[in-house]
Structure formats: structure tokens, C-alpha cells
Amino acid sequence: MTRLEGLPQHELTAQLLRITDELADKFHGVFSRETVEQFVEETYQLLNANSTVKTHLATLTARFAKQRLTDHGRAQGLTKVEVPQVLFICVHNVGRSQMASALLEHHAFGKVAVRSAGSQPSGSIPSAITEALAELNIPLTQAFPKPLTDEVVRAADVVVTMGCGDSCPVYLGKRYLDWEVADPVGAPLNRVREVRDDIDRRVRSLLSELLGD
Image (cartoon, rainbow, N blue to C red; front, side, top):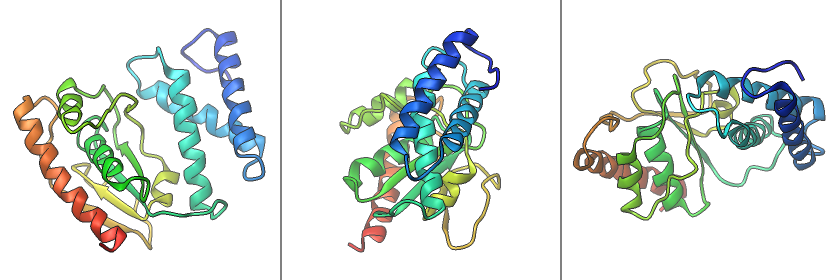
């Protein structure tokens, strides 16, 4: 492990080694330990560079590294693909893309894999967004802003951009959609509800297309 910033070195090394051990076991036969270690270390660096709160960085590193390895395996054809995957992208990954991801996951019941990312991830998810989704019994307790990485785009079948401009890489064979949706960050709850309902209609329509309903 190279030296990383954040926790005291001995604590950080122990935590990253534990994460590497767990993921190397999970992805045994798919990726080498060296590949897993590289993803874990890079993931920590990405999150540490963009995170304003460092308290749960090790936990978030484990979750995001697992997602990235899953997507890398999917993109490389190393793992079995059973459902279509949708990626939602906005600028900070604390508003529109998080709402869309949560709504699609809620409606899809596992029939679609869902990801979200930010072209410039930062901050935290506003309480009004969490509250608006909670009104539909959709918890957002484990969501956090994630940087846009190459493998998540490569693994997606549908890429939905939501106000992030041209920062998303384009690959052949994928469906790209651009949803013009108002930014709910900083808006009052009644306005956030309107944005939520707008995204919900779009999500339901996309889900119907993906499942052929």
C-alpha cells in the first residue's frame, strides 16, 4: 500500500488491508488480489479527495470499491450480466442523480441495476431531498456522492445525464439520454417534491421501456 492521507497511517493501512482481503475473497477467480488492491487504494484516494466528512471513509471505500469491481467485471465480460444497468449523472451527485437512482431502484425490484455518479461530486445530500423521498417510503440513508469513473460508464446500458454538460465519456453501443430537470439542491420542500415527481414520471417511463411493459 502506498501512503494515503486521512487516518493515521497504521489505522488506514489495517482498514484498507481488511477491505482488500474481503473483496479479494469475494472476487476470487475474477480478479487477482493485485487488481483488487489497486481498486481499493484508488477508490480511497478518489473519495478522500472529494469528501468533506472523513468519519466513515473506510466504510464508503469498501462499498464503492465493491461497486467499481462489479462494474469493471461487467464491462470486461468477466461476470454474468442478468439485468440492464442504468447510470444517472449530475454535477455533484447529491440531488437529481441520487433521486433518480433511488426512484428507479424502488420501482425496479431488482430487475434493473442502478448507479449514480457526479462529474464534480461534493457536499452531502440535503435533508429536503431525503425527506421528499421518505414520503414515498424510499430511504436514502446509505447514499453518498460518488465520482464518475470509467468502468461505471462502460458497464451501463443506459446513461442518463441531468445537467452535467459534456463531461460524460461517450462509448459506442450505449443509449444516452439527457433529462432537463430542475436542480432540487437548495430548493424548499414543496419545490423538491415537484422535481421528485418529474423525475419519477421519467423513471417509470424508462423502466417500462427497459422491461418491455
